[in-house]
Length: 414
Image 1 (cartoon, rainbow, N blue to C red):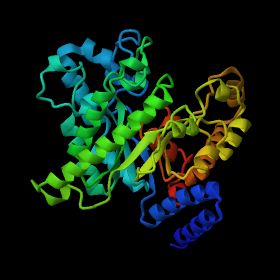
Image 2 (image 1 turned 90 degrees about the vertical axis):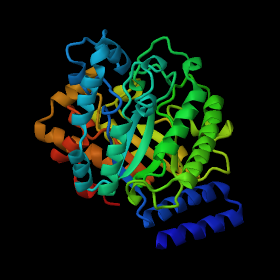
Image 3 (image 1 turned 45 degrees about the vertical axis):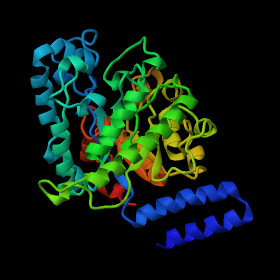
């Protein structure tokens, strides 16, 4: 509470003196401090590779199909044909279970981010000819939300793939080297977001919605800012409508007893925040929003040319990312790091030699230092979710990172 009062006092003082940049920082810190006092800082993991298949994370479900035959979920469904409901259904029922959520809670997390494809929330009774070859899973989503409610975990529903796809990357569910921004169906995406808000927005466990995952840099700042404003309005209207018409069915606890509006997260991915602000986002009337940021130190020439020492230093300072941490910290808006990991580009020639020269004990020390540096840096975020909860590579698996001592449960405490 002392920090809330301190931030409020400095915000008021800087506004009076005309120090607008300092006032914006104070406003962001005030929002974060208020959230902290209310137990609202979100710390958790992604349930990656579960309801939206990414081949590198779930090779088992792709079986003997080669990557050129089935690089993504779209082509896998086509290849499986009439067997797709069984194969994908078995994966969904086994990869993430209630036991996983119990483990997430037990180690000290309070949040799960759930990547979804737009097809996940299509009605399963809908004629297959009227939809893409994917397999819907509304019932599994609802079961997961009930688990989260019982365990007092907050859920961020993440629209990881939009109609027409927001990029040609395989993480959308369809790898497409010919993808163009005109492929993305913004109108249909807004309809999916309305559906998410109406169907799940009143569930007690649903804390927020990530409106889109990693939109392509080919999408202009103006188009993205226009979409964000439309998405904000669509979700607010849909969740308000849902709230006014919600009736008790089986149990009163299945709908939210809180009057807090949904938290909406908007990606600032591989672009400058200043460019989105210049395009009119966020607008002054928006409330309960966060800027959604992904922070990795393994992709691209910039990161792949660094030494281990340089990587550890970058993790401490937060420099080298887009958007830059300094830009986020100078913003008046709260931000969330919804994807980060412990993956370093140890496959590149220079770093590979440096890495291979280390003993197993020294490798563990490096990973521990890398994790601690990131966790200290991310304390400024109002939310963070590690990618991911489970994966064969321990650098992408929070469960395995904790098991190896790279991250300790005590590290999660503020």
